[in-house]
Image (cartoon, rainbow over all chains, first blue to last red; front, side, top):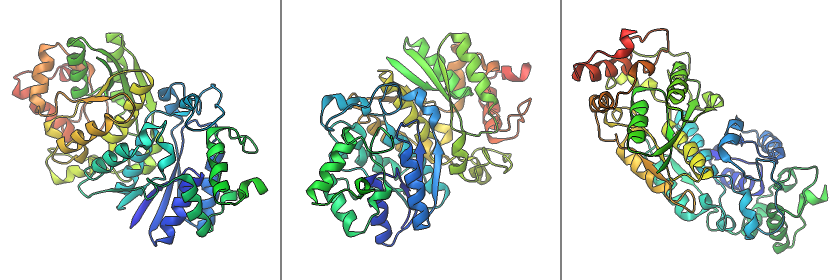
Length: 216
Length: 216
């Protein structure tokens, strides 16, 4: 298939990119700057796409900061520490972000005569992010089919996978995890305390592997 | 209800705005610059919102020009002349535009603790615009309900109406049509030849009224 892949430069979307290429698909990638503090991830998506010699289109959605309200990822509010399931992690929600990203990726797929878009949503995200739930993704798949006169598919092969299972696949595919970025704080080194860091640490630990990013 | 209204400054969305206010809803509006040649419409949405003393948030999506491909509304390709149902009118399609607009309006509704978004899609648009079809809109309504933990509604009271019926409602509501803009070319005066002008002319003619915009 010809696929537009939503590519954050993080662990999940990088693994999914390698997974899709390994399956023989033709892939180009799209990344978004939406005012996130951890825009360091966008350097990662650019560098990984360059390494793989595939397109990475960066779209500036910084105007949406005025729409998102008080998400701690895009406003002056501090990024909380703890586990994703903690109640205080709700401040990291960026309202309807996945629908916005999917709608633009679908537009790009239509104008490129591509068949599908892909996104790295997975089981660990569902607790606090409404737009990562299977019910949301499945309804998006239904509307994508009628967004043009040709059907557009939304591919989410990791939807039922835990993060540790994604890392297991990525290790087999030799994903260069030292080139990815996960921490919500976007400082020089990962903070190892925010929800994103906590989940990434756990996922490598469950695979009995040290995160290559921490070895640099 | 508290509603975020997608407001282009054109005939349909202006009539819908007056219709929603007349029904007693609290409304704020959102408009988009996406590289359209007829960005004159954005002056209209600003002025009409000012007249009504309601919010009009303008979002700059000009970066999406690189996603949309060769739509005649956003590229150097000439806007075609003729009726909406003509095959050459397909160049005016901006791929998946309504899903992009709805996704951002829904995000704004969620961050504002609002109940719904509204959009002026109507029966005349379906022939060439896939994202105006009832099947598309109805599936969008389903996914909007699960875009957050509270349901967000998509209101489309004009979905089954012809343009002349919308004008009929607007004339009763005293919509200031001289303040609206429809022509795809965005020159000083309406061209009266593009699909948008042709349909607008017809709608006023069927109501036995001269378009107030042409009397200025």
